[in-house]
Length: 199
Image (cartoon, rainbow, N blue to C red; front, side, top):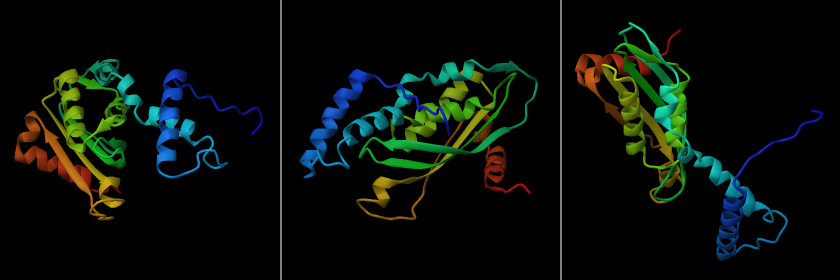
C-alpha cells in the first residue's frame, strides 16, 4: 500500500520510564537485551501495556450518557458475544472471552455501540472478572435507570492455563443482575437468548 504510515500516540515520558523498567526485567530474567530480537522489545512492551490499560483514561459513565434517547420500549435488549480482553491484576496475564449484556428500558435507551465501548473501557484495566462484571452492570444501572440489568462474562484465564494449575480448557463464568433480572422467569429468558443460535 502506497503512502501508508502507521500513527501511534503514546505518552513519551511514561513510555521511557516503562521501557527502562522492562529492560531491567528482561536482563534480570537472564536475557541479552542488546541482541537484535530484543533490542526494541522494552519500548514495544511499554507501548503495548499502555494500550492494554488505556481504560484508565476513559469514563464509561460519560460514554453511555453521550448517547441516551427517550423511548417507550420496555422489552429486553440484549447485546451478546462482546469480545473481552483484559489483564488479570494478580499475575498480569491476559484473560479473554465474551460478555453478554442486557437491560430492560424504563423510558431511556442507549446507542447499541456504547455497550461494547463500556465493556472495553472497564476491561482495559488491571482487573478481576468478578469486579469487571459488576462494574458493567452498575454503570448501565446508573446511566439508564432501567427496570433491570444483566451481565454474564465467560472467560479463559492465562494465569490458570499457562501457569499454576495449567487447566487449558477451563472457562470461568461470572454473572450479575439487578431489578427485573432477579426474577427467575426474566433471568431464564436472558440465559436462553444468550445461549441460543438464531438461524
